[in-house]
Image (tube, rainbow, N blue to C red; front, side, top):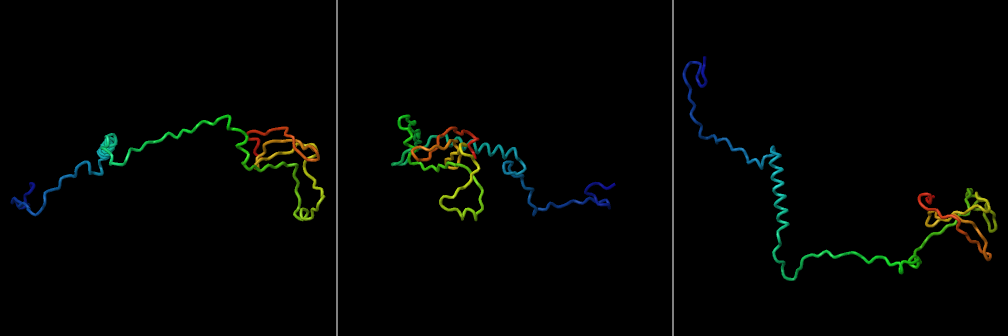
Length: 165
């Protein structure tokens, strides 16, 4: 039987220490190791706590001519019922359209229309007309003649989602 370090011939072999080989390097600190996530999280938590503590510290005196920032109160005055009248809407442009009815015509027929031509619509006389403001159906009414002028009497207001045409 051959023991460790013994040659098969029976003589013991001793090795001379090699002085050129550096001793094994120590393991890097645990905080720098990538394979230590618990320690990395603890390090990050410690850094965050230090940053928060630095925020809470009082700052030294400001340089001459400067003052700390103050957030101003941006609360406006409440609307007054006296000033909130219809006069506020006088200069707002609105596109008002009263639709008496609709028809489909060929372009050729439209080009042949002359003054006094009669166009047949899909509504009968006396049917309610649709009133649109900025393209949105807001009401229905009936056509009247008053002092030789046509006018519309509003008979129904359209509210909510049914107003979308």
